[in-house]
Length: 285
Image (tube, rainbow, N blue to C red; front, side, top):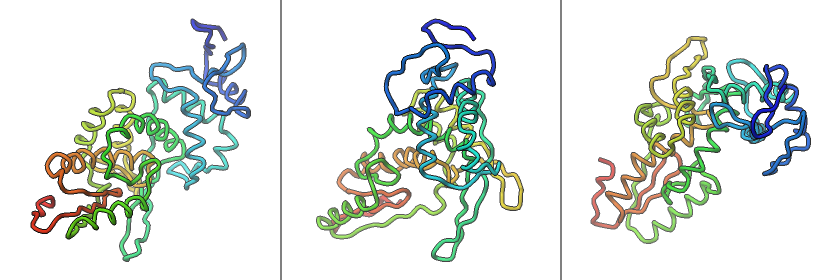
């Protein structure tokens, strides 16, 4: 073990450094400043990609709070909690060096209330933590540009806010157009989505990992492996944010430019637009 410029600690192997994750984590409280001394973990260390241990630890806490089932590898939260320091270090090491590759998602069929079936793609727990790392960074960049009529999957906004906005719009307009995009998550064009992500976020590491998640593939319930050429799996931590970015470009922004006189509210893939009597409804064209 030796010191490099800036007083940070360099270690020659993963094993030598894994144990350092345990030092200070029990006292960790999301502080902004850490004093690095001999033998202590540097939570702000980075490698070729600007991803710190702090970012991974915060992502772990967030995903842990949401629970969720195991992915393809069968790893449970009980196992992750018992081996958190070792697993989180390995995840950070791969994310920060650019060598992280996600596992395929596990397909799960969920029965709908109307009798249909919705297919979810469940990433592994470690992949969900990795997605949360990217989501936290990407969300800070796109949230300020999202349309005020967008409510789904956004911080400090809820379906109740969307309903209240819809009620307000209805009082001032004569009729409403309700739009639901069928199979939206399963049919998002990857090329167009990556173009939108690159437009709003110039960080190459974000683009790198988003593309890898989109192409990770699916293991169907019968064990068949399927390539993913369209869509982003429902069940992924970052999928709702990617869906919002895509819809912000193809609908929200288009509405604001082409039909600014028609207020709307969107929750996820569901839209409601209010029109005055006599206005055309070519927003559905």
